Image (cartoon, rainbow, N blue to C red; front, side, top):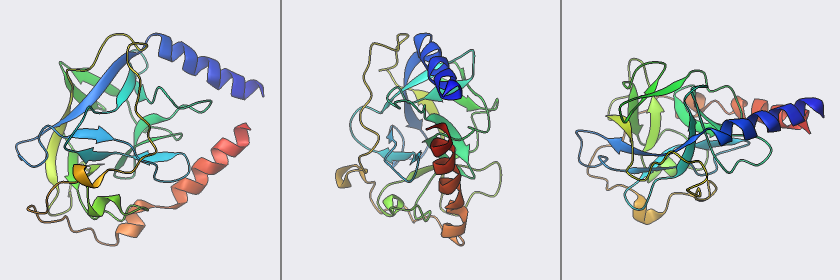
Length: 210
């Protein structure tokens, strides 16, 4: 119980000094340039990042001192933005790095490179058959993936209380799905890259705190 209370208090303190940010895609490829980001439910304690063409991108809380970005609506168990394998997600596991901004451009572990938009990744609910998924590769990105950077949207602000986050549980709508004019990325054994064992770890982590 004491450990659980410590986590909740730490999350509350972090939110008090957080900046609300809305992340948007910037790319030389016109199909994804300007796309918004959403985080539909993808498993136990995990919400993968997907792209859509309409509406405001989801509000997130950025703590510069901690180098973290998290959902403002995560309840007792904060969901932090991180990289799991090659997938960018909001989840309860270690984010595996620090976030920062160079101007309005988002960096992960000190670089804005290595972000891509990919389709047909083998995600559990098959969202990536319709919408581009945000992934992270330091090298050897799958063929057909589109290079991008992430930038602060104009809707970002300095007050965590000034913006409410949309729900993270809704699937990307069909209207937000990009067209099929760009060939889908080829993933070798996408199910293996998806690493479903991570969900079991996340569920165990949550259960241990209850």
